[in-house]
Length: 118
Ligand SMILES: [Zn+2]
Image 1 (cartoon, rainbow, N blue to C red):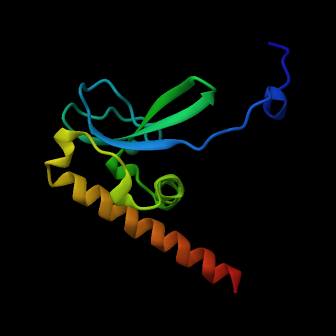
Image 2: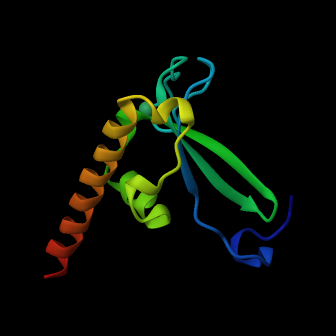
């Protein structure tokens, strides 16, 4: 309310962190397509920094992993293998597919950036 937005807050923005998990309920919605993520389905949790000591968790369904998203994930975790995953998800096949998708899309983003640079 009447406070200056953005730069005047006096702290640095921090990058979001990511986590792979299984939806514990069917109530969570994907931030991108707004569809409910069904219970038991794999999903990506986005832990977005709000201010020191305060963050918010957003969700994204596996179908909505796109180039920009994969790039953002790897900007934080540097390799899809290093994105933490729930124990329940780690023992399933889905975790490999998600990691592969992130790696594949992010390397494509990198190639496109190089292409436009020349
Ligand atoms: Zn989605």
